[in-house]
Image (tube, rainbow, N blue to C red; front, side, top):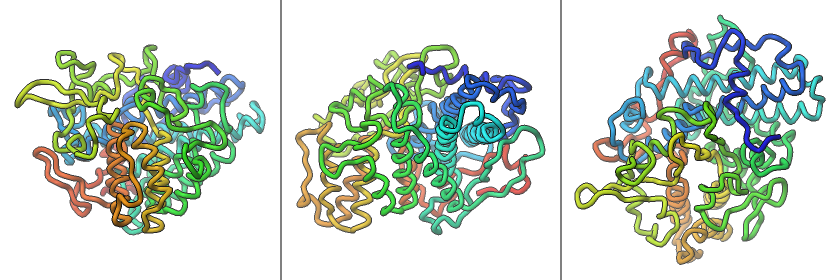
Length: 492
């Protein structure tokens, strides 16, 4: 396996035939043309199809940029600077409509990815498994299932009510599990949130069983799914379901009982000594899963999709981006317990003077064409997932939870150490963990997930009022394209 995989080129190869990489986005139900058995006729072609699934997922309109961006700008940490609908001013304003760019495109590219996975799984069953052999086939199918499961999870975070609202009984999204290669297959009702989560966990559990424990290169260990990837993602999924016992069960597979915390099997996932390393060396063992970018044409996020483009100021203000979103002066950067000497403060850059002062997130540093890897899940998240689950499942100031919180905080702020005595009750420790998440994952797309899973009000920011869970637009509407083509789907 080459160290750098040009997923975009492979993605285009996968679409060759009736469709092309530049076709119009006319349908939220991806219509791909891979019906010819020759697509799975050689080991090289099968591998090409597999790698194209990652290419679909890393598109700038999905996990290559916008999924993570929307997850942050819906929350309270950023201020919109450009009033540009294309770059999500309506998402930030919590008033996106059915036909909004974000709502339509994220739905489309997520289901495009799902359909690629379904076609691949179908193709393997039809003959691809025989071509590559049973052992390799099982690993490849496991990768497809992990990508499909993660994609369905991602859809639920925007287009469906949180699991906590009705224990998963509310409408989720259409659960498509077979490849679509032609017209006339659009009608499908929404499964419940619980039913979609059941399928997500089925995909991730089956993936964990068949995925390799490790690859031969650090690049593959970061950009392709392995057993620890599936386990880590399950801690996120179970946390979103408030199934804290299962978070603990999964996390214990890859987190040692005591510090220094490290995965005892598979890839040796662990925190890096310096948080800055994670965002300069993208293939460390902390980065469990990331979307890789290169400067090769078509293998970077593309216009107005890139993390640095959104968050970094323009060149005149010492940045590499377009300054679409500055940091909210009343958001997490105003938190007094986030000390000035914390290394994560180096990701905040100030411009202007007096009344024109603005703060920017410069966690992503590569200039155009913006080749920073996009983090999907890091080991620090697994530690904090476990810490929170320990607290919420026991309703105590759990000593291991305190140690896990300290592992993340002390890595960047050696002067701050929590003890059990720091918290009068379990709620104080739970709130400290949530606060740490806001600091640690600023600009990584997790804020929306955290607000949704706990049915918390989205805080006010600037001119945008707070949004309670009972109010319209707490979640997104269903894509207008889906509503037009699917007679069985209902809107939110």
